[in-house]
Length: 97
Image (cartoon, helix red, strand yellow):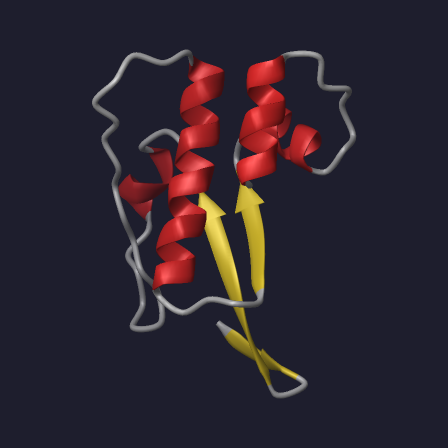
């Protein structure tokens, strides 16, 4: 978190695999969560579910000015509008984000 022109800016780092969690210890200004989804989903669906869950956690913690970093290049490019989206299920995830 940091102040930017009097506004608290939150940074969200989402990793849909366990790689970051094993090497990084949160500081007093950080929250760290591990999520387990109890339903069948493709890798792509899991990536979207992880991002949405992370955003919900940040909002519940009080975030209003959120900058998100994500380790999924595919999801990042789709969210940023850099990839054409053909699948309806992806469009539904993007609407939720």
